[in-house]
Picture 1 (cartoon, rainbow, N blue to C red):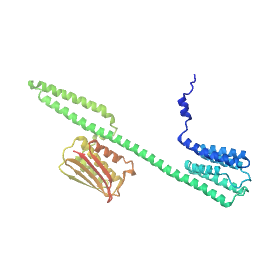
Picture 2 (cartoon, helix red, strand yellow; picture 1 turned 120 degrees about the vertical axis):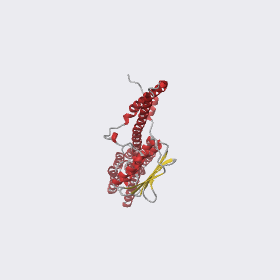
Picture 3 (tube, rainbow, N blue to C red; picture 1 turned 180 degrees about the vertical axis):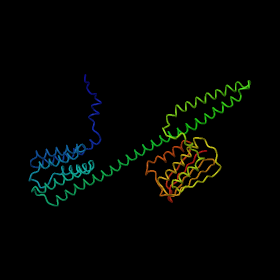
Picture 4 (spheres, rainbow, N blue to C red; picture 1 turned 135 degrees about the horizontal axis):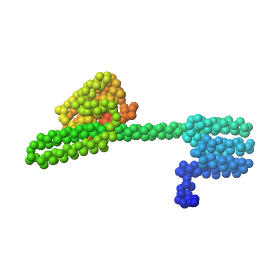
Length: 380
């Protein structure tokens, strides 16, 4: 059984959009003017028909602007007679509006076709034998070209705006992807560090328990240590179960040394061998860092050096590590002031994500005197 549409649904269907309301508001005065002009001319019936075509074309101009323009022109051609030496005002205004719409909405080729239709109409009108002066024809063509050029100007502006929004959306999506990838990478590294630390705790607890096995007065201590061992093993299993899925297949990854600031000298040496004029300066007394913080600090320096190699090949790069209340990391080069926007920009996003994870801050940008600087502050 087919149900009748509800009243609210019917009203929503019949409701005009804002653009349709604007077009209708423009079409009605043009239609009214066309009717008044038709009543003042001979062959009123033909001019009334042309006025209706003109009003309808203006009201529907956004749906098919080229066809609407052609309909107006054909309506005027069919209504022309030799009685008057000037065209009515209403179709002229409608043609200006349609030429603007054609130029604004359509690509260049169909928009140029619309302008050609308008100019051809003026030429046919001038060549029809009616008393239409050359200056009048030139002026009409000038108005047509002006309306069309304004539409193309706004078309270009709108195209650039849409392209900028699209690029911004793509950049935002890349940034979200970079953050997600970096968080997954951090989780994998923390998984390794935490699992290793817990495994060491389990081994140490087991060693102490075995040392106490011959002492009958330490039964409660042995039971407590056995509980620590069992809980630790379960924790390691849960870590592997919950976070192990984040690990991607990477041949040889298990054999690679764990990232640590203790290896930053070897990292600088590697990029120096790759052709980058890199130097390292360590200030303060190196202090032991939490495993996650240690790995993230190393990754920040590594990514900053990678960016320098990518965007400033042959430049001098200075790496500075300063221990203290806060851990200060700086990678500065004297290259052309590279910008991550030349690539995906995911390196800077990843470094900021690592710094923020530990409550730190990261600044990255070109220097006024030339070059590029990455500076990170991490609470030690």
